[in-house]
Amino acid sequence: MIERNIEIIKLLSDLGANPKKIGAALGPQAFLDYDKDRLGLFTGIPVHTIEQTTKRDSYDELIDNCKFIDAIYSHLNTSTEKILETLRFNKFPFIFSGDHSNASAAIAAIRANYPKAKIGVIWIDAHADLHTPYTTPSGNMHGMPVAMSIAEDNKNQLKHQLIGSGLDYWEKIKDLGVQGKGNISFQDIMFIDIRNLEPEEWDLIHKNRVLYTTPETRKEQGIEHVIQLTKTFSASFDYIYVSFDIDSLDESLVPGTGTRVENGLSLKEAGQLLHHLYQLPNLAAFEITEINPILDIDNTTLKNVYEVIKDMARVS
Image (cartoon, rainbow, N blue to C red):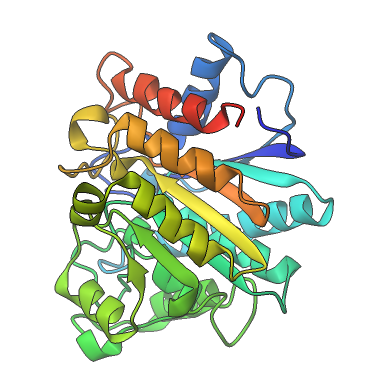
């Protein structure tokens, strides 16, 4: 691997994903096992594991617009503490997470470790994950981690009410990292290749002038242009967090993920992009998320994601 003082953190939770598509919690270990039988890019690197302690079948009643929110809060809180501990020991957290709600824990930990720093986030994803319990069409909380990190409710686009324990836990999630305000602002995030958003999310992006690229940006101006945009964006921050949701890849490449979307990145484009991002001198942590081996077909997803990570890790 590239010269960084890496510690691997496995966040084994899929509670934020579609309840009908369980299996993302198995993704981190599946990827590491796949690597072990091949190049061993991660062999010998210390590994820390945070498992979800609550099982889906233990729930008698779900809050429709924020499913499993109490268990997700507990998992995020524990995950934040572990990532923060890693940062405080001057290690680089290389995070393999189950579902994408886990990303809010990483952002909270970076903020807690660097309370006065300027922190930027590069979000490589088919989705913006800007929904809240007040706007969500599904109630699945892997569609909310950016809103969690910004402490955004988006009540201007209100579709649902939130009261009682659901509200209590939502407020606690928004308070992870720092209390009373977001860990990042809208101007601190750049979305890469987003393409499957609801109107409520686009409204926030346009109203707050959030930087983003789409497949059209990439196709018309090339992946090199996208890479340069990310480098320019990153240069203005003290620390950068990169979150790579594998559904940013074209749907044909990743049958083993829960929310596939057409018109995504090719393996070569993703490898190029991540390679340049991984070289950033101010990179604080990196995440790969949403691998679901139960949905995979003949290890196609593992093989393709592995090709991307191999490309990312090549020597400059």
